[in-house]
Image 1: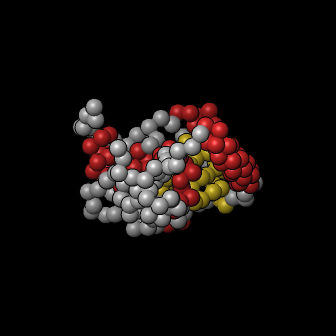
Image 2: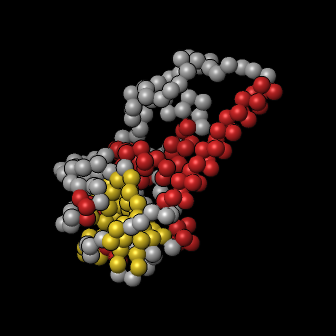
Image 3: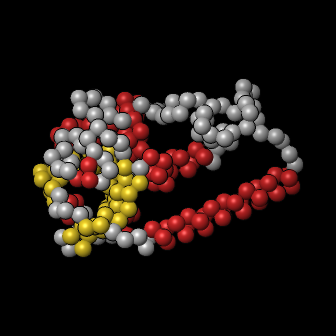
Length: 232
């Protein structure tokens, strides 16, 4: 038996009515998100300078990071010089994206850009088993210009390319990045939710310090890196 509090037990008709009440709110939230997305598609944009980043094969212009696509999503990964293990939040967040080919049908690409030197960044990607394309802005003001300066936080930026000209169309950071994640969506379906102290939960629900249930970068490497631990 569980040591935690449990939801109340009711008859099927009562449960279905409560579920229907919640579904009405869920559908309203979906419609509001549709409206937000519609407004996002109507945002103006800002023309970007002709930045040069560094990739696996050397220097690369920002326009060429698109690899022929017209749209680009960038996850700006936090980086701390001299650290063997980088931000566990960024490491875990980007480990979700193992198959991104579906974006080809939307003329889009999704990449990681970090302040770390490219050799160190690629080595870290390999160490933790990350499957995304990585680029470095260590020798470019790009990161600072899009809200992800050296020793700064993480961010998500979206760009549109017209020929060799690149425009910035959207930006978010903090909890704004959650909308890109399927992990939070799955966890929020659970009766106990994220089990973090800040959440509004019934009395007796398990709650821990924020982030305490997140996997450490070293644990992610053990699961997905070159020598993964067999979870079975």
